[in-house]
Amino acid sequence: MSKDVKISSKKPNSGLIKSVYTAQILELAEVQVPGSSTKQQIDLANKLKQTIRPVYIQFPWLNMTLECVGEEEFFQLKTNRNQLLINETEQARLRSLNISIAGMSVGASALYGLVGTGIGRSFNIADDDIFSTTNLNRVSATLMDVEESKVQVAYMRAKEMDPFLDVNPINVKLDERSVHEFMYYGKADLIVE
Image (cartoon, rainbow, N blue to C red; front, side):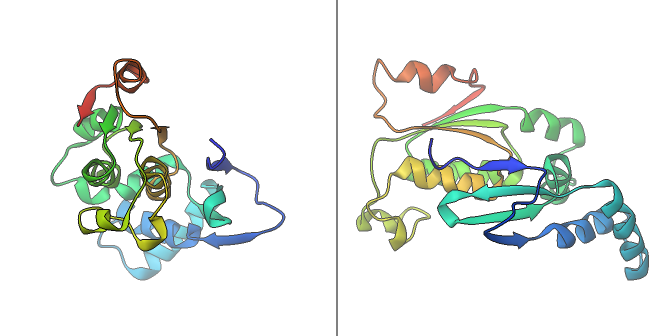
């Protein structure tokens, strides 16, 4: 796919770079030592910066590179508020799931909910349709998405939510020939239709 994200440990020499790295390091200090003072969090954040190197994620459709923490630290932050609902063992199992979702109208909402809560490592998403203005009453999309591929828009949003995921967009109508790739790429643990 021409619009795939690229993740690197090297800072690019040019282009727009947005950094959330320092904010994420401070968040990590806060979640690792809850209830600590601001000074303690800043001290821990300074220590974390020495061991946690930033990664650079290029989003070609935004013409931008994002500087942020790596995959494991990102997952720790992303799932921190799940702790009272899902224990660590359950979270690890849910994270490892391979999920296939058919239809990126209502299915996109399922995709974004799963990605947001850290459920699923890889996703197949299938739809052969494009967005029209009449879709906007039931889908998390904008006017900027009208006449764009539903599966491509869902892919981009999912990758913006978690660039470390494996998302396989299948831009075809599911039928007897295409359903095999949809169901078996990544050996789907869960199928949503």
